[in-house]
Amino acid sequence: FGFGYKQDGQKYRRMPHHGHVVIGNNVTIHNNVNIDRAVTGITKIGDNTAIDSGVHIAHNVQIGSNVLIAANATIGGSVQMGDNVFIGCNAFIKQKVYIGSGAVIGAGSVVLKNIPPGTTWAGVPAKQIIK
Image 1 (cartoon, rainbow, N blue to C red):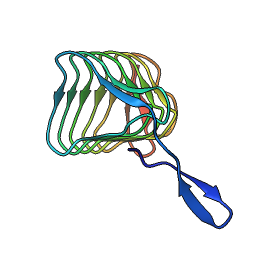
Image 2: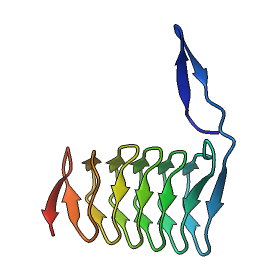
Image 3: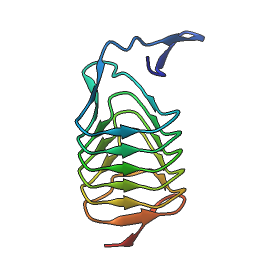
Image 4: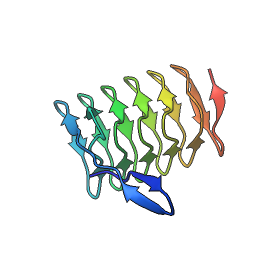
């Protein structure tokens, strides 16, 4: 299941997650990783991706191939990530953000907007530091 709720009057009601998780070939998933099922469609982890311990991947996330995600990173719902991306430990990626192929996200960064391909970002909030 995923963490999805919608407000109904004064209460929050759980949104059902009817989708799937698809994990590619040669994917390494370390300890205490959470990958949420999609609300509809799929949550996808691409081929040759490595996910370190304590990572959270929310519903409907699309991760490309050859991606490295370091310990305790949090990836919000519906994030789309290209190939050959590196996400540093304790990074937070806001929901519905696009991370371009070859991008690097520094440790502890908070990504609040789309990241162009081949760039390096770090900080809180994350700012581009290398083109």
